[in-house]
Length: 218
Image (cartoon, helix red, strand yellow):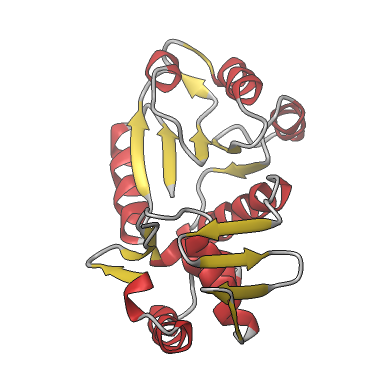
């Protein structure tokens, strides 16, 4: 999960970057509107509205114009009701007033990412190598043989199948399958171990050390 942090206070940015990185996010920091507009694509933007080279509301409008799927959370000291209303009207998904706790920010990030994932179009049939997943019917076949999975095993497997060949962080799997990143990460390991046993080929799901897991697409 990639987050664009737009914040001109470097002490605040450093603290937020460290906290978000510990939670498994990849963070790119931009201190200005210009830097934010040149940043790499991301899943979510944390956006201060007071920036040295422009108004963050204009930046918010531009980011929303570029992508309807991007999660945007305004993180700012502007706490008046009119500021909150304006922030939401120009395209922000949520509005957090400084000072705030990381627990609150984390919960809001998860909520926005869940809404973005639900809004994104979902392929009904996913085929990766010998694996075939019917998303609507919630069935999995490997080499044309149906594999009986529990609800959570299916959700974990679907999280990997949406990005075949790509290492999916444990926090992303937790968010997809459990709706939160606060769950015990050991839970993911247990479900992946069970998946490997049921799929018939433990090599289908690879461990990516220090990151998470990957579904082979060969």
